[in-house]
Each structure stands twice: as C-alpha cells, then as structure tokens.
Image (tube, rainbow, N blue to C red; front, side, top):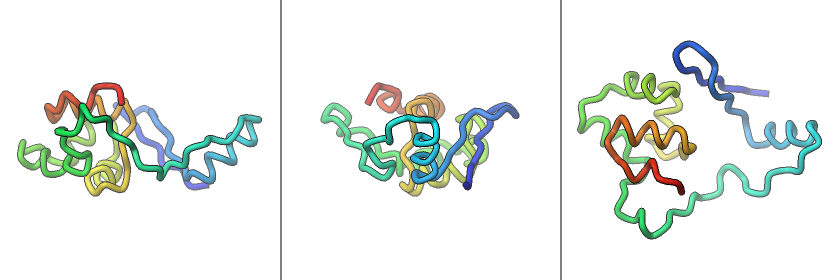
Length: 113
C-alpha cells in the first residue's frame, strides 16, 4: 500500500492512498464501499462559472509572485501535491480549497461546492 502523508507544521495532517487501497480499507473496516470513484469529474454549479479552474493555481500563484514551496507550506500540502493540483491531476478537498482561496485571494473557492 502506497501512502503519502501530508504534514502541516511538522505534524501529520492527511494521508493519501490509492482508490483501490481506500476501498480495501473500507471493506476491512466493515464499511460499504464508496460509490463515487476519486477520478469522477467534479461538477461546478453555475454560480461558480466565472471562477478560475484549480488547474490555474500555478498561473495565479506566479502572477502574485509566490513560490510554489511557500504556497505549499502555507496551504499544508507537499510541493508535489501542489504541482498535481496546478497540473489538473488532482482536485483539492474543501480544506485545501479554503487555504488556496485565502492565500491566493480567490474567495469563491472557499464556498461550499
């Protein structure tokens, strides 16, 4: 099982596992498997149509003169995970969206999806 541990202030905060491993953990814990695969597209509601995509994080960050390592540290993710968000490979969860919204000044990202 390949696990990525994401820390904030030197303390583990998140553990990221592959979808198949997550399903196996749910089964071992006696939980029903999750219905939606992690790769399912996130549907945006119409009120967020003018918001930049999370894949635009890199451009917004560069426009504001913020180093990737600095933003990753402030948001509480690894630089590698931030790179995946910037490339569109990953969609950030609600906590990471709020942190990105705060540090990059995109208030719509902090709203509930």
